[in-house]
Image 1 (cartoon, rainbow, N blue to C red):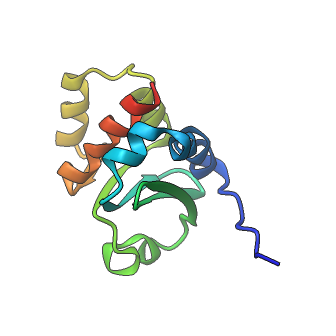
Image 2 (image 1 turned 30 degrees about the horizontal axis):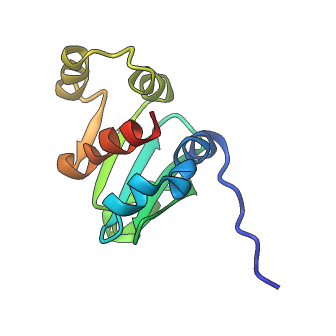
Length: 131
């Protein structure tokens, strides 16, 4: 019998619920069939970070406990991009409530931390495919 994967919880669960329908999206499968991409979304005030893994046209979201910062480092997970901010700001970004100007200000003031900007920007494309 196959081991059932634990469903991500909290913030990671919300991200998984929104992203995993891409696995049945033909456009997504075609665009990402040769891609291998890992993006960490860390709601710094949440219990779980969302670790998005795209490989060969499939997307998977894992929940990683947000207790030990060492566990979320690039060396530990091998992510290509990371976006870290508060849960509240994540939802404002997701709902389009945060304008580009306000977003830039949050980045400058370090309320939003981004590493691997090009890879994090890939999220914009993923969300547009969900639209």
